[in-house]
View: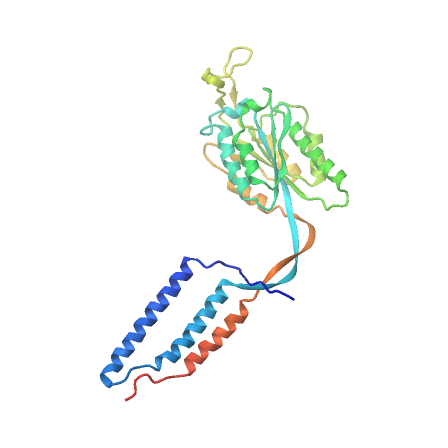
Length: 331
C-alpha cells in the first residue's frame, strides 16, 4: 500500500488569512446590496448562491496553488561549487594605532565580520600573525564559529614582534599541500587570501613564497590598514606610547608599495582601509568575482511542487464564472 503525503511549500500565514477575511467581507457586502436592490421589486436574489459556490471554489484553488501543494519525490542533480577564502590578520602592536578610528585592528574586525556573513557558500579560515603565524580557525562553513574567533582578536594573542608577511602565506601553502596530498583525486578548490595588515614587513625576502603562490593559482587581496602620515602606537594599560631603543616614540605608517606588488604578482587586487576611505565593499566585489570550482554532482530527493493542477482548475472555473451570466433581478 502506497501512502501519499501532502506537504505545503509555503506555510499559511497572516497575509493569506487577511486576504480570505476581506474576500468574505466584500462578498457579503455584495450579496446584501444585491438583496436590498431586489427587495423593492418583490424578488429575493437567491440565484446569487450559484455564483457564490463557484467563486468560493476557484478562490480556494488559487490559494492552494499559492501555498504550493507538494507530494511525490523527484530526483534532481545538485552541483556543489565553492572557494576557500583565508583571512590573514596582522596582530602586531602597530595594529593598535588609532589613525583609523577606533583603531586599525578594531575597524578591520568590524569589516571582516561583514565579509564573513556575505560568503555562506564558501569555506573561510582565519590565520593570525606578527613575527610568527598561527591558524586561529581552520577552513569551515560555520560562520558563527568564525565570527566568535574574529571578536576575540587582539594583539596580545601572538608573541610581540615585528611583522613578517612570509609565515602566514607559507602556512596557507602548507594547508593547500596537505589537502592535495590527502585527496589527490579531488578537483582543487579555488583559493583566495585576504591579507589585512599595515604593510610594514620586517621579514626576509618574500619573493620565493610569492612565486609559489602564483604557480598554485592562489590570489592575494591585500587590505592596507592605516594612513601614510602614520600614528603612534599606544601601549597596553594606557601607559603612554611605544618607544624604540633610543627612547623615541615609534610611528607606524601604512606601506602600500609591497602590498600592491604582492597583489600584482598573484593576480589579486590591492585595497585600503584608511581614515578617509573604506574599500572593503570593493574587496567584497572582487572576491565575488573569484569563481568557485565544481566539486561534485550528487542527486537529492525533493518533493515535487504540484501547484499547476489547482492553478489550471481555478482558471477554468474563473472563465466559467465570466461566461455564465445569471440574472439576479428580473424586470
